[in-house]
Image (cartoon, rainbow, N blue to C red; front, side):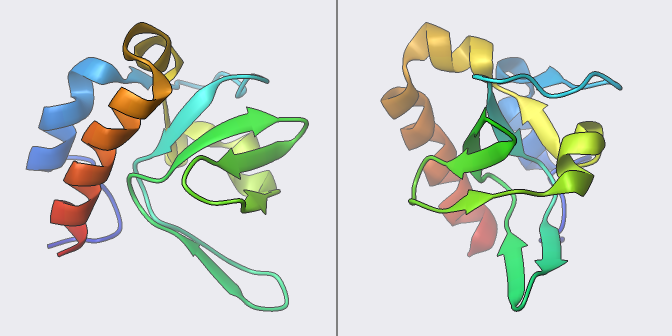
Length: 112
């Protein structure tokens, strides 16, 4: 199993109907995003964001839904198509709790 990306996997096929690809568009304030690729950064300590991490972008920070963690990641913000899917429409359609439940089930399976 490749833990680094959902791209070209069965998991991508399961969520592709829910997500919008981010071409070269900047990410938008108030939008929800789902990581499709693992992100590693060193900022006084190693920080790893796994695939299926769900976050809200506000005021230059990615605020993670399932924790109180916040991340300023210039590489992600400047090149979102390398790491993120926009899931704002599906969150608005199904509600954050319902969509998050679906994603967390897939994430648990993916990481096991």
